[in-house]
Figure 1 (cartoon, rainbow, N blue to C red):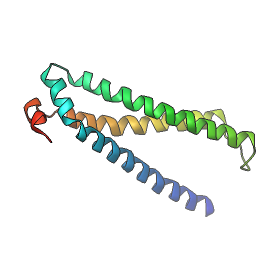
Figure 2 (tube, one colour):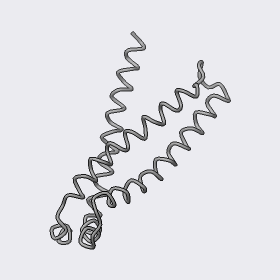
Figure 3 (cartoon, rainbow, N blue to C red):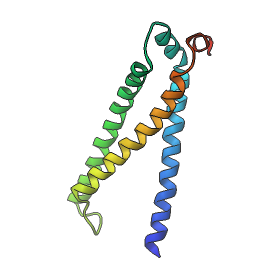
Figure 4 (cartoon, rainbow, N blue to C red):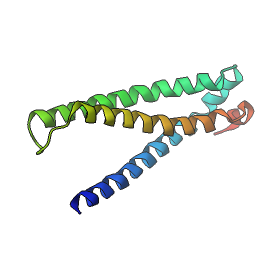
Length: 124
């Protein structure tokens, strides 16, 4: 039963983390609506806008992955836990983290890039 309690807590924490990433992404992009409007008015496609924001979030998430991998390595090295993390588990967590970031950023950017440039330029 202890395993299921921990699994439930991890699931709840995962939902909170996804909601937090989504909220931060949405706030960041909503602050940059004018920039999106200017880029769209100058001829940027939706793909180019996505590429711009994905590159920013890829850098941020890469830093996060490096930090978390370092922490996992230190935990494995100094035996803080009864069990060791395998390379497969670490890679799975990294892929899962990047997929969560991709999905949340993609949804927000898709919504923001469909705004007409004239409306985005008036947005404050």
